[in-house]
Amino acid sequence: IVEGYSLLQALKVKGKNISYLSYIKKTTDSSSVVVLIEDTAALVGLGFTFVAILLAVTVNPIFDGIGALVTGLILGVLSIILALELGKLLKGEGLSQSDTFKLKMLINKTKLVQQVNAIQSMVIGRDKFLIIVSVDPFDSDSGLDIENISETIKQLILKEFEEALIFVDFSNLKIK
Image (tube, rainbow, N blue to C red):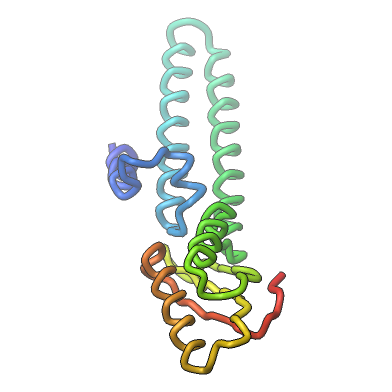
């Protein structure tokens, strides 16, 4: 009951508009990932164990061993998924390629700069990102223009990622 209640609370945080797997892949909230995967593993494992014990008592004792093996496999697979997802967050996972491309197109569409060289990002907290945008300004842009361009780019990005810390680089360096 406690595991089920905990999972229901985690699913409320996830929201209804996103699938379970998509949420786990996209979220930057490691505590939500841990609760969702751990509670799912616990409930599925308990369910298989219950069915296996019921079959062991009513049909054949071998089902007790089969249930233990299946439960172990379930917990092992979900532990690997959890380790992989948390590893991404610990290593500094950034924006998805599609989000990065979307930002690049958004900036290019404004015609503020000659080109966007690169966009680099990293998770720095729960749904918070550090975003570095490297751009080539037009040759005629003055210092005041550069300030305005930088502020406009920051505002564009903040509309998409409200909790972002944004740096705009005009040094014509390619970020790898």
